[in-house]
Length: 233
Image 1 (cartoon, rainbow, N blue to C red):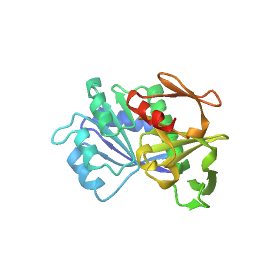
Image 2 (cartoon, helix red, strand yellow):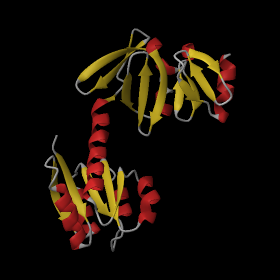
Image 3 (cartoon, helix red, strand yellow):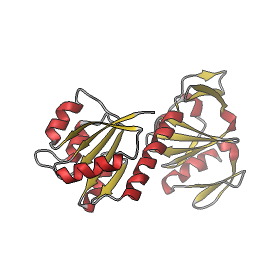
Image 4 (cartoon, rainbow, N blue to C red):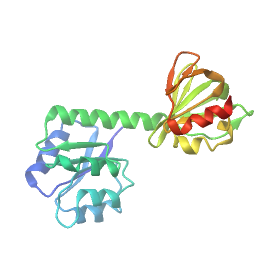
């Protein structure tokens, strides 16, 4: 799959370094290169791309602010000389954070993370309907897969996605865990942690800080969710 990207950096040598690294990855096409974040903003507002490679410290508008304004780009990679910006960059959903000077092996890891992220998106399952009351349909790529609700052991939050673990395999669906649990199909599931919800039929026993499922799978039990399990007992 061909991916389009934009490179924004006010330093010419740094722009050339990014372009040099990208030459090793023919699946990524550089649409435009900008030395000004304002010029980049004007372009990106009418020309969406897949990936943003952004410097952070730039005059007129920082890379952080540019990312906030161009949030529709799925992937953003920040490149900066200042490691202290790392936390702030991830608050605007950066996929990765690179520190100058760029190193080829570290840049390769960034590209691998981009591909991993896209693979998850391609397999992301969108719940479309309920079939027969206890069956749901998830969409993975071009395929529609039916899942029996009683085969689902637990759900795990992963940012904007939710992993569904059945007795046979794992699926990934687009949507937060909180929103998923609002669906009628999941009304019997118990939230036991900010990142986990379980199907009560698979509970073997409950310990002080974890729930043990019948296959010996350990699920963390959050302090604020213990009352949920007490209501089920």
